[in-house]
Length: 279
Image (cartoon, rainbow, N blue to C red; front, side, top):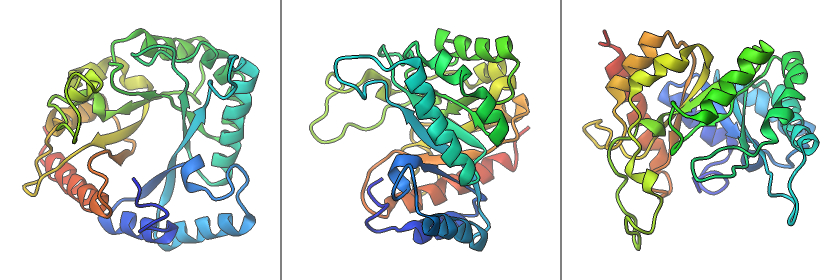
């Protein structure tokens, strides 16, 4: 959103998060931390003071392994590990339990750059030391049943690590199109914006490895009806799978200032209403 740094500062944002009734907060390192990757001691003090004031827990820290950082050459696995470890250390300093590394991709279905495996394995000991779980995102157009997911699970099973898991973005369950924006046509925008319609029941296949949920959504109307995400089967599948972690609201709809706050409020009301009478 364009709200942060314009109509919202850190305290105003956290105050709205708490007012919705949320108990945790997720940030993007590069976007939200002044002086990243070396925030001032004063900012860190302010961060913890505000978390205490609004009774919020740091949940997921979004980071990047920017494999296209160097024009004309690929990033090495050592450089990827260095980037990941830089953010693991900062996330640990700020109290986060999860780090989502967005890894550069090599295909339209978001297959990550091959350096991801070694970059992550080099960082598992540090993640363990910091009590942080590294969790790459399963994001549309990548479904749950996909070689990317199989490779992530393969690393977990091969290493036995407890510090690597899956982050599921609920945008993969989108089953109705996002409305076209001005100047867009279905032919000129990515096809996955029409929704890839992953069956929520597929969650059962990966449930033991899922550590975090980004509750992606785009539009909830005044009647608390989501226009793209089928929340009842998604939430039922999460309950049936035994998931007990966070659902972290991720609004990706219209960017009009202040609109995100009302949309997140509607999402929380919708989710509470549905979970109150799940089977």
